[in-house]
Length: 264
Image (cartoon, rainbow, N blue to C red; front, side, top):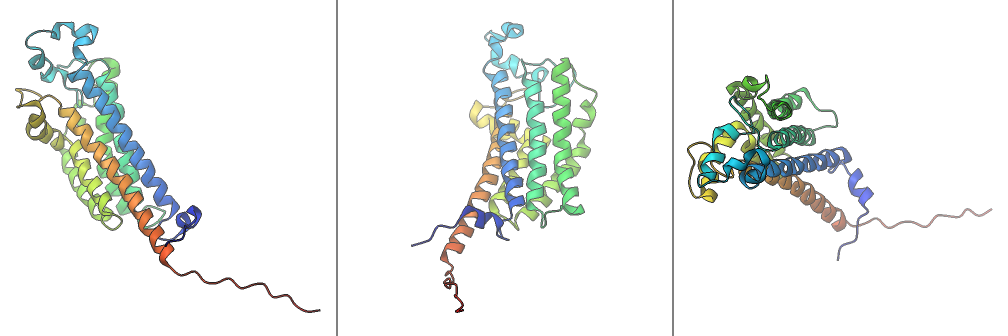
């Protein structure tokens, strides 16, 4: 039989500091919100496009091949480009939330309350490329034209910076939770190489084959990867909390002594 441990005791314990819990919970919330925004953007392209006024011409026998054209890619809009509803704006918000979630996850993995310069470098290497993609998508959607950040957001240099950053994040996350390590690895599904893997290897499994341009449900696969990362962060918080509660509950408690009353 285990005894119940007050929540304040767990939160104040050295193995489960409050600042790490808060950062991890915020990270999970940001990642899940990012996945939801990108999922809605994906549905706008692959499900609702024919119902949007400017896309009534897509209701033809070649509907799928038309909407699979690179013209409608919204994660990193490139000229020539046409937005599908609010897909680019939603994608931009999703990647900005993703950048914030990755930053909070790195902060949660830090050894101390104050993040070290090394952890800051990892956080920036992972988050900045996501943030640039997000800003580019948001600005492009608002102006209905690819923004001036197009070349920067799609630069191979960002890949060279980001992928080692994700590997480093997975390494420092391993000191905290196996679930957080899995979350760091799953973030790679939202990188530009991850997008290519989604469109050529994973999405075809659900779409029934590859497309000459962008395979159906590609962005949905990316959204799923982000959602799984958010779930993994939450699982890491829950399992770490549960293990520590069980350990505290198993420890024998010291008997309390009655206060001595001095005789006058």
